[in-house]
Length: 239
Ligand code: CA
Image 1 (tube, rainbow, N blue to C red):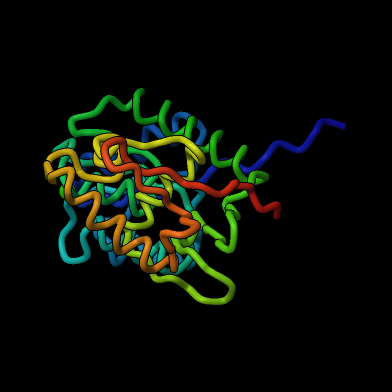
Image 2: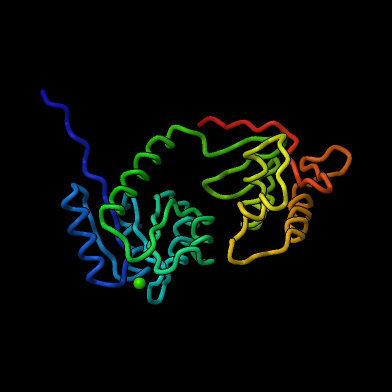
């Protein structure tokens, strides 16, 4: 007996320009996907709630509920659906914020449909591989959840800002290694914002305070000229 084939992946396209939405739907269907379109953020969120898609293609510039707001609401709902952002402008603050808020990839408009479909396949492959991998890290007394973008110490949610979370993420990705202020700026900030390196010190300061860090045995060690380093071992949490 032939193996039963998997049902096609469902893609939800949230895009207010009908020609683009329709063109995407046709092309996705031609590639074997099941595709559905929504003309604004509210409609997209409603569809995702009743018939969850395997991936969402999300335009940022949408009437009423904008793309960023849609992404924000999805993540607040704890919906882990991968999101690929479409944007007319690349490198803008919204886009980087989108990536920081849990979008998986982006394409600048105008885009090639072939490119979009290749990206969609890559994201679906990646998320499928990740499903068995931990999305939670443990380090010292901390539990860092990358799905929910929060950090707990014991049962206490440390309520990090997105910026503090991004900073911590960069530090944790290189435990024991010194990260220069410039590196931290490059990885945790919008490159258009051009903050001063001093800004890093300010945010590290608030982060250390929330972590309950002390100078005696610091979690984040400050090396005056060089930068900062995370001092504890980091391990993935299984399950
Ligand atoms: Ca639009």
